[in-house]
Length: 236
Image (cartoon, rainbow, N blue to C red; front, side, top):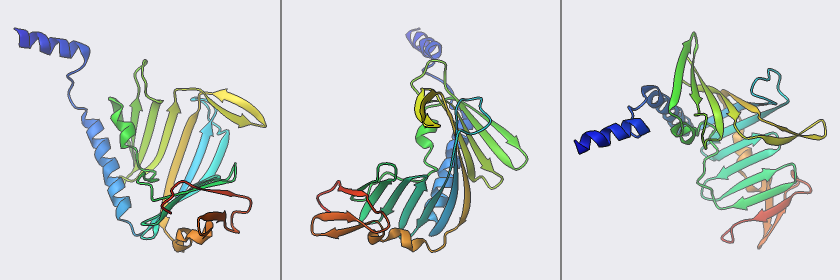
């Protein structure tokens, strides 16, 4: 009798629930994409970033293009004025073009891989899949009361099961500049990918492209005039 009551309580509270097969399929697809990407020796992805003022907006308020490169020499990510470089066994470099700052540290284990969405998916149980000719769409929806940062996430995969687009609906209001004025809104963010073969990628993985080191002193290279270099790791 006690066991039956415990089981009933679990069902009422939602503690016991069947594993969502669509969620499992999505997780497997993301893992498959991540594994395939990590095996590539020479890969370049073109990124397209769009910011919409509200969830229902059709025309983007802000739009930027970017690049993600992965090869044996490391990984490089750029979107608008932000750059992140990882050079294996040497260092990581994070660059913010807005405030002209450059942060140098030992190699960061956090991946800049744009396919890193597993942590996001784990937080959602309401996940549906729609199949159209040429692509699959997974929609993740948060409960009305939630601590998740996104009310809705859309993940698109092409016929080869490669992720090509993410659309994220923010729950919290975000401050950003529009026509020189500060705007507060609940935006939607869209990020699209196009995969190409990397060309001449080695130039991104040389430290003197970013900074010069003289003893314990770091200075920005000629490619980054006026930038301040901040060494975050005394071991470098």
